[in-house]
Length: 129
Length: 320
Image (cartoon, rainbow over all chains, first blue to last red; front, side, top):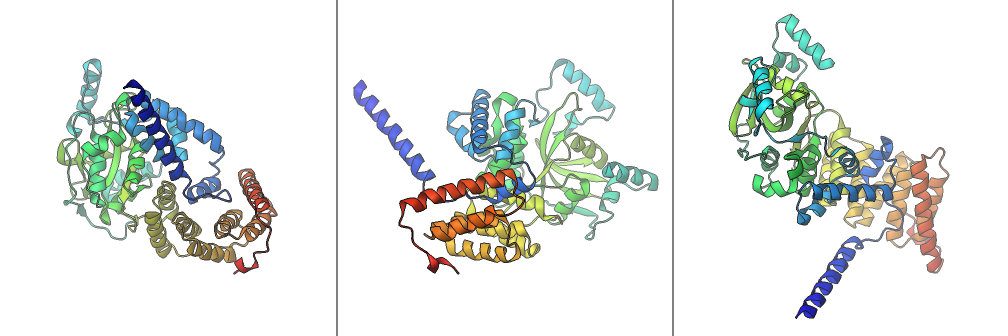
């Protein structure tokens, strides 16, 4: 029973690898094709990182997304939709970039400080959302 | 700085902030409200999925915030990042176009019927409360900005207060465009850059449409032209790609990228000899940037390897 299960799992893995490989190898490139995105990046001189560095950055961002609670089923698709420059920024600042959430869950001291600022008309936390 | 100047000028002349931002605007409508814009009230920390669902719906995508949450929400940050909103937009084959960072640019998009997804900092710089909302209109007489925001379907915000919250988020605004729709902006580059990220995600059919429309609006634009060629290449339409690249080569005979991509097209058509000649020609260009030179050498090596394994034949039939 256990053995059958293992074989099934292995076959599943092989199938997965093959389908991935065929998706990648649909159109073999002869020269190293430049996408319009690559060209614009070269023009703006932002394309200084190599393909290898890009791949490493992608792995790093994947690990960070997983650590931040993104489901393993979703993480690959989320990574794939990001451009190389977005990957580079995320890799460096994923913990510091603005994360839009709304103004829910303001507690304690933070609440008091923001309330004072709100009365002074500096912020718009409480009426805004 | 320009905005501050405009703001101060507005104060001095007694004009409202909105009026000064509208000053150099040709189609100066005193009020705009895109009232058919759908509204999805946000739940918990989900203003990102809610605002994005609104913007995507406007571009014709049938989607709910619940479907977007696993695509953009980052539990560890209790919120959604701007880049992931752009990335998710591409997953629906839409163009995530970042507007120029100014109130005038925001108003121009509204005037052509595009709601703008904005990031605001409702707190202060040292105690930020990041929030996404969708601007759907403005009222010059009452100096108001109108939004779909959080759990409020129609929120009116005093323009100055809105600007303070928006300025703390570096005036970030995103318009979600359906391929074929153009932004109101005069400058083609930010739009074409956004389309190029859609192309890179593999949505070639959509990027082709977007580049074609852009070429109509900005005739002769280099990025639109090479974008059309690259989209055809992505779709496997080698003859169309070749045609566009050869036309580009007439105007830019010594453009290494045009030569490189044409070489790829020729190689795919089985014309390895022509492909190699194109790369050789590109390698003679002076000066070449270092990444470009590296890429061309890589292309040359790949083609050399291929030609060695095949019978060397003069593929003269390949020349146009």
